Length: 292
Image (cartoon, rainbow, N blue to C red; front, side, top):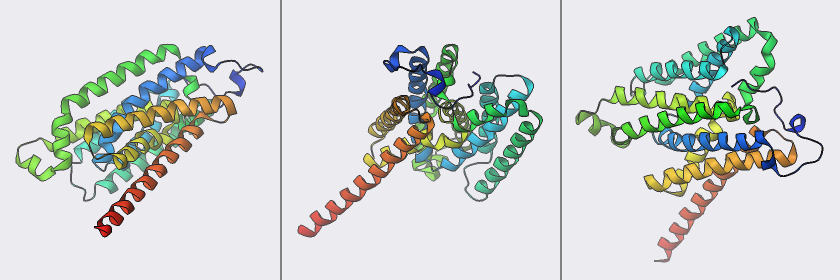
């Protein structure tokens, strides 16, 4: 899955536009965006619930090193992304659940990884344009054959998440009680971060490693403000992620602006709308209580 150089649709489109679904690359992009949106919406919900958004952000940057290293040795960047983010997720998970010092350790791993990424680019400047696509994403560069890989990785991730979801939820909401009941906290945390690693690698194909927050955190954070119930929250997170990814593609088609920009803008719009709705709801509750 080697990203194409351009980050807009201008060079891929004929002068006269037709229906965006008349183009093979647009249908492929919509399918890829759907796969990634469903995965990031579900995994991101648990990531926000556990307060590990910084770990997700760090994994994306660690993955950049894997992708650039893969390009350097002639391997498809997706496999470099997946391999190195999995190692990063395993390493972060082994740091344990205790917050003390964990962010510093993750930050140091992040800095080291970015340093190696810069070194790899130094030795392989011929494909520097691919680095731009890795940093900011290019869903239009996803090939039809790569859809199978994305779908397979998504199914593996969601299957693993379903397997650990009960102890993970218990550990997220009542960590001390869960450990007292014998839940293997470090094992579950490590498994979850490796699931996050795969989701991050897939998101990077759509919005790039710098904007992974857009799909991994934005929809989930907004969903948790609209509903405190697990099932409804996860469903809303998926719906928001899907709407932002598809909406971004459609807006990019009609404006020739970068797809990643539109997805990011829509994600921010939904999140700020959730803040406003939450604030309005709290104000109404206070007024209703005062009236009684």
